[in-house]
Length: 214
Image (cartoon, rainbow, N blue to C red):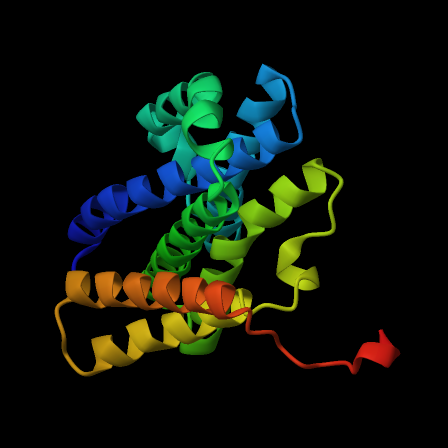
């Protein structure tokens, strides 16, 4: 796939992730009762944080959010709609489920798009996967740090970055089998979202330390 076609596909693919991650930032901000500026900062950093780090590593200029100004307006509109989002989502009994779902979509989108962009500039497979995972988790890490919360990616023991890691390898494996590029991206995304939500619903946890060793 040529770079122009890839860029067009990534624009629409990343739009889904930006909206999802912006919503997760709004959900987190409203839960902590931050002010409007704080809500926008959380939405913006969650939506674009991973992409900025990705662009720094692969030397992509201008940064993604600068090159796609319309996405900034989308994030701003989502932040401005925070009171309505709070009314219809955060006050429901399934509020935390919506937060996890939005975060899972953002994770899936940016893990796959980060990996695909790394592959496009001839980065080897394992570094491409690692860069994809970093793209997927760094925005949420920034969100948690801004809220003075131990980042969930290193603290909640539920599979998160590892889910993205597996999904990126699935994406690469499907590419090697010769499946269409866009199909590989969507399958990888669906796998990551579905697996992350399954881990959440089943409360699966990674056993690393025994309880008395923590």
